[in-house]
Length: 111
Length: 113
Image 1 (cartoon, rainbow over the protein chains, first blue to last red):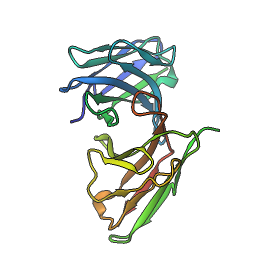
Image 2: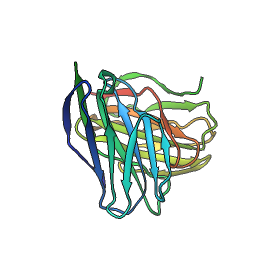
Image 3: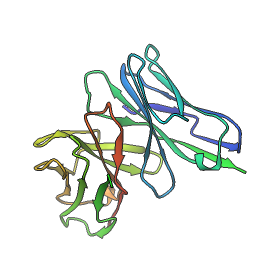
């Protein structure tokens, strides 16, 4: 079952902040975040593991609430280059190899 | 350069004509997977492989086959393609399982007429 992302789309002006949420009905082992620009492959942003460990780019911040099976990606002081579709992917407990993606959040940053 | 290479990038074929999309990685990754991407549906996993000769179904495996005879290669086989398999396909690899960063290939846009 795919995780649910919100919002589906968001439009920002350069310099504004945004939060993208991801929630699952299953107990999660980890949450992944990727960004995809139009016509390109998804690119890794961050992994958040159960227990608090995070792996990813320093300029990206995210949270993982294990009890609520939710994660949020925080984009601060947005730049034009942040535009794209953001996907969260979840790995549920018991299956360490199956990554299920949400439907994506389209972020547009305007000058 | 570390990369995942898919071929072909674009393919138009007819219903029922068997085809193979190749995927190769040069990072000695254990884990490889295939996804399809359709508008409004995000990325859906087709098959994944934890290591050589070890594969398992993802969320949408019907109509697809895979094999992992070598660590670096993970081809996707459509034995009898149908129009509902028209999609954008991505191959991905990661060092070990899903606790590590996934590297994606550039995608294969398949059209079945």
